[in-house]
Every structure is written in structure tokens, then in C-alpha cells.
Image (tube, rainbow, N blue to C red; front, side, top):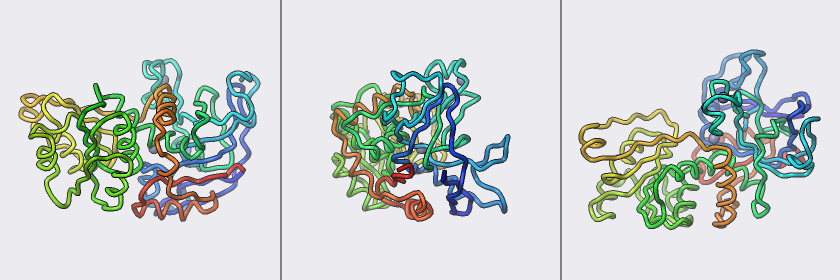
Length: 352
Ligand SMILES: [Zn+2]
Ligand SMILES: [Zn+2]
């Protein structure tokens, strides 16, 4: 089968791999849609090393197929997987992690925190391929109202937005600041406004700000045009927002997300971007009490909840997907997405 790997220096390569065969508790998914995540761009941009790939199994030094937002259809299963667990033809999102199964974090359904974590599309083969073999436990059936592309959104980006909002005490009737309007930020805007929050959304890019208004943001702010914290206070009777979700990972984004939150408010940080937070702990966290909350994607049951909520709230995830590419055109897909696209990019029909 064909699969895509990162080769470094903004290059990808689609190459041949052996067809996958399921172990006793595995299923084989024929890939329907496989999303491109903002976090993939960090790997895409890494410098190349002659003769090597950017994603490599350290034990076997073999290239690893990228893509950690897979949605596929069950076409084969191992000898110890029952029909009830994974009927042939079931369309499912792959919860893209597995772990040892017994540690504190695995028991809490957060294998992404396990010391032995496997991430599909990271250190194990992922969804930018025709087929993917994964443990049956990773499957989250796709609600029938949702398309494969909507499932690919949920598999990391949109699910991460939901996971961030789950950390907050309250969403309905609250003032919520969303910093960064890539797919995670845009999904946060869509969920939060559908759940009754008044959303203020921030991004440097005008097209993204315009787009956020169509997903329910009440106000959009350009951080280049003024002090975000001062503008947020003006919009909230001087208090600041009840909560913030930071998705940019930049230093100014992180800084404003925390300080724009009112006293006794909460800021959730989900973006990865290498930025820092220079906080006056006495004044900004103790005397003006604010909660700093980190969130790494979601648990498997939160992913199932996120999918059901997307269906129930009629989240316009299909509209959020602004470009579809064939697997063989993955280079073009990554280059365009890395240039700062609006919306979500997916690789579709690789396994058709
Ligand atoms: Zn574990
Ligand atoms: Zn991701």
C-alpha cells in the first residue's frame, strides 16, 4: 500500500509499504479521510537529514507513516475481535493513542500521558495511507450524522477544542476568549458559541477573523491593531473574560489569554508553539486569582462525547474543511496548509 512520510525541509514523500495485517486484537481500517493538524507542521518544517526521514521508528529505523487524524472503515479484524466490537463496514474515528494499559494514565483513558505511549501518525503508522492497523480499543464509531471529514476534524483538532472546553467550570452565558483561529481555535469558537458562550476571538489573520464570525464569534480582535487585554476589558465592563482558551502557542497569545481573564477566571492552554509565559505570579495569579490549566487533546470517552456533541449541536464541520487532497498530492496539501490556510485540510479516499 501507499503511505506518506515527512522527509524534512518542508518535503513529504508518498512511498510503498507492506499491506497491514491485524494482530489478534487489531482491526484494519480502510482510510476514508485523514486530517492535517497544525502540530504536523512542526514535523513538516524540521530540517532534513540526508537519507533519513523525520518520523522514524527508533528501534527499527524504518519510516513511519504520518497522519494522526484518521477516519476509516473496518475491512478486516484479528482473530480475537468480535463482530459486536467492530462489525465489518463500521466507520470509525481512530483515537490516535495507545499505552501500556495498566498505568495511572492508561486507567484514566489518557494513554497520551503513558510512558509507553504509541501515537498513530507519530511514533507508529498513521492515517496518511491506504490502510491503518490499530487495536480495536482505539475505535470511536462515527455518529451517522457526521461525514468522514467531520470525523477527521474531531480526531485531533476539533476534539482538542472540546477537551479544552471540558476543563472549564461553565460555558453557557460566559464571556470566553479564544486566542488563535486555526482549526482548533475555530472549533472552540463553534462549540462554545453553540453552547451559549459570548465568544471574543483573536487572530492576526483577517480572513480567519472574518471566518470566526460565521462560526458564532460575537467579536473579533486583531492583536496587531491594539492591546488585546485592554480591548477585552472594555468589552466586559472592566472585569475581563470569565475564561480563555489559548490555541496559538505564541508568547503574546499566551500572555494575553491569561491576563485577559478576570479574577477567579480560568485559562486553558492547548496550543503548541514554543511561546513562554512571563507571569507576575504574586499580582496575576495569587492576588488576582486565576487558574492556569494545561490540556493535552482529550480522553477516548471525551472524543466520543465531542463527536456526539458535534452531531447534536449541528456543528458545521464540513464547512470547516476547506480543501481535500488525494494522497499522491500530499506535498501540495502540506505546502498550502503550512502557508497559513483558513480552515482544515484533509487527505481523502486514500483507501478507496
Ligand atoms: Zn500506560
Ligand atoms: Zn493534532
